[in-house]
Length: 158
Image (cartoon, rainbow, N blue to C red; front, side, top):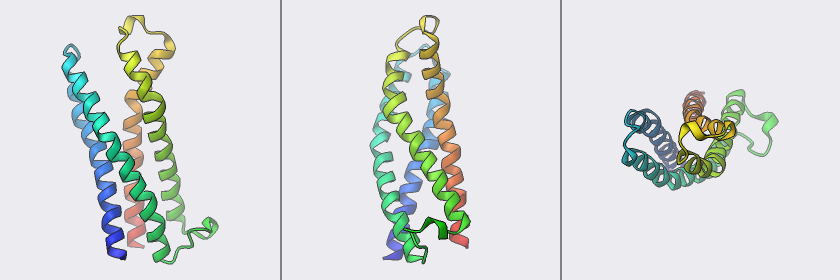
């Protein structure tokens, strides 16, 4: 059972982080380099929307398997004050990542579709903030996700 949980946990993490890397470092720069072609923006939106359910399923798997794995390793899940420091670091990073993902998917995402239809010269300051935040937030999330991966590696080796 332990190895099955580990495999599920790793597959979920790889799916989420791999997709983030693809969207942030491959597809987004490609779309930005071809601003004048609306088909590229539509491709990016379609890819991101198709990736979203994968993210949510991966998060559900990670949130189910993580506590089970900690428990099987003898970490009292219900008593955070007794967690090893690396577990506390990883859980903090995971909480931040979950918050940013919710913010991106449920708040910024719907607004960006509306804002991107407005020519940049006609956007209000608030609309421009939404648009700019939606561009850097996934990169920040990717950095945090990679930090979670480093913390997980340290935890696995301890």
